[in-house]
Image 1: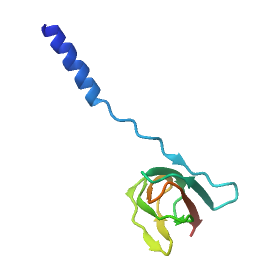
Image 2: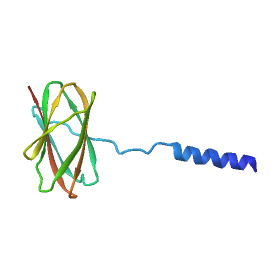
Image 3: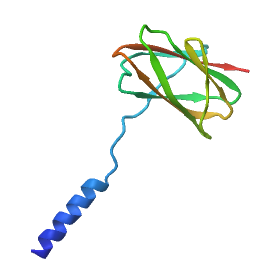
Image 4: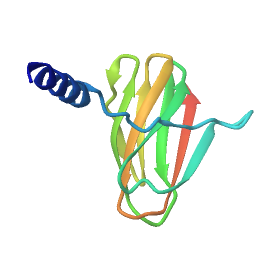
Length: 120
C-alpha cells in the first residue's frame, strides 16, 4: 500500500512539475537587400515573432491590415524595450544586437503586420 501511494505521489508530482511547452516563436526574415519583412495570418490569441536585429537601428512595427493590433511587448537581449506610437505603427530604438521577441495580439483572426529595421 505504501509503495502504491509513493508511486502515485511521484507520478502526480512529475506531471504537475513539467513545464508547459510554449509555441515556438514565428521567425521573421527580411528578403536579401530589404529592410522589411511581414506576416499575414492569425494573431488574435497572441503570437510571438522573433527577429535578429542589429544595434543602432530604428525598428518599426506597422499594422498593414484592416483590423487592430496590439504590440504587447518587445524584448531584446537587455530585456523589455519601450516604444512610441507613430500613427498606425510603433517605433523602437534597438541598442543591442541579437534576437528580439515581439508579442502581438489582434482583434480579428486575420492580420497583416510589417516589421522594418533601419540603421541610424
